[in-house]
Image 1: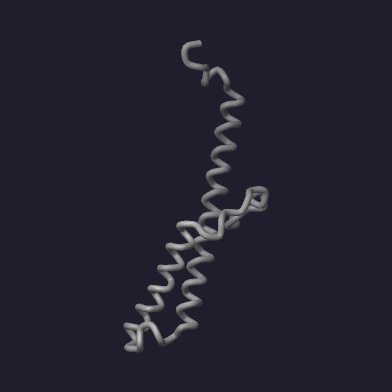
Image 2: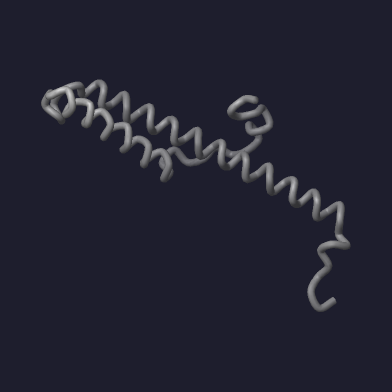
Length: 96
């Protein structure tokens, strides 16, 4: 199974700045800082390229996780609405 099937292309893309991207980008940056600290290097000044790389990887992972979650939710909504359309007797209006 692919991470995102072809039918996910019909959905609008999520915003570039979302909670998951920011959170995972920050987590990646902190991971690079911790790596510097554990290796007894200057925490903020050493390995700036690694800090940027880890933050970018976290940001991209967060974006694609949000994209996958939106696809899964859209798929469940579509299946639920299809079921409601096929079985209207199970979903009669209240008071009617």
